[in-house]
Length: 253
Image (cartoon, rainbow, N blue to C red; front, top):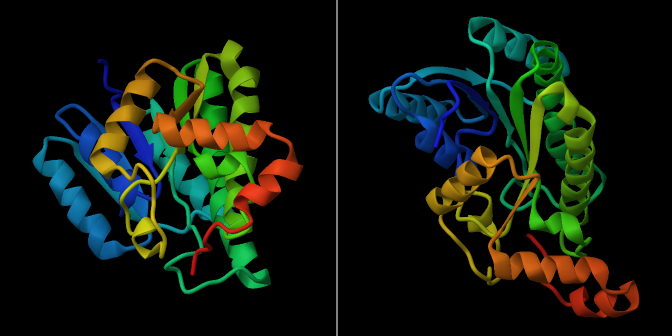
């Protein structure tokens, strides 16, 4: 499996971002990593360096359009980006926020604006040189709005549709775009969920699935299969039926 030589990952200081960073870290690879927790980000950077990778870590807020554009431009100028993984996101649980106006705006700002702020600066540079790959982190929650996490579901549905459209739009320009739709993955985000999580998998296994899917240029990388099938079914069944099915699902705190 060919490993990209220059990789940028947002939200690298925890969860899937952390696992992907460790998986891609090796001699000959330069990793541009961003996150919100300086201690965890620095620790990850040192670990990846110990595996042979060159690492440039940046503490940055993905909702800051100007700062993101500058940072991505600097990274690309240092070494042309082969792969950009727009991974940073919040769920609403464990963030000290609920589901009111402020919470909804925060979730949408991070999960939608943050993805846009990551993808567009890289996308234009990749288009100009006719090569590159972008991965957008969505979720199986994108397939059906759930009453316990309306803003989260909406944000993931937005970037899923956006990424699917961009994939077709930029295919002839040599840019490969994939949308990643994980189910429950062990992370600081899911650790606060006060309800059972079917088919919960560890971050390392999720990262390997994502890496294989990206190497094969799959348009949608959705897993695990059982949860994906259930999410897809909720999407295609009539609302009269699915409203009843999801009415009593637990909410995030």
